[in-house]
Length: 165
Image (spheres, rainbow, N blue to C red):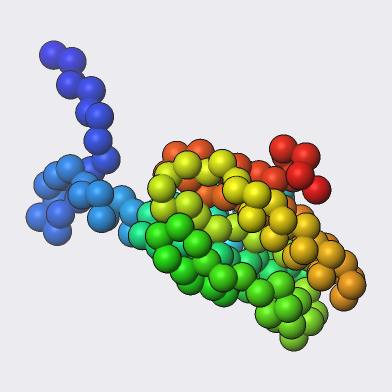
């Protein structure tokens, strides 16, 4: 007799029995994996690492959140910080505050991201303009802006990959 194929994740109970995992349990497990993978000192290997971190942190937020990943010269994590919180369709972002924190940490590079609670990761003209201002502000203090990601409910838009800077 062939075992039926399961289309869900399972959790083992103390009794040893298995049951389908709840969405909350799956998200909690994913957060635990992401947090351990991107702890202080972990190296960001490339854009996919940044996307995975920001997706996990921002995709399910109800309001717009603007977060910054501060990195050293070898692109090791120094700090992940949600710096600005907004409404359902905007967040007030201050490049000066990001530059100040980068200087406090002696960061060499940053990746930034924000979510679009609407689920559509397409950037607005304000998003593109902010990216240019932020890149210019960080350049003045020798901090490299690696990317600005916009997190949707399914997709992620990378301003670097789409040639916006």
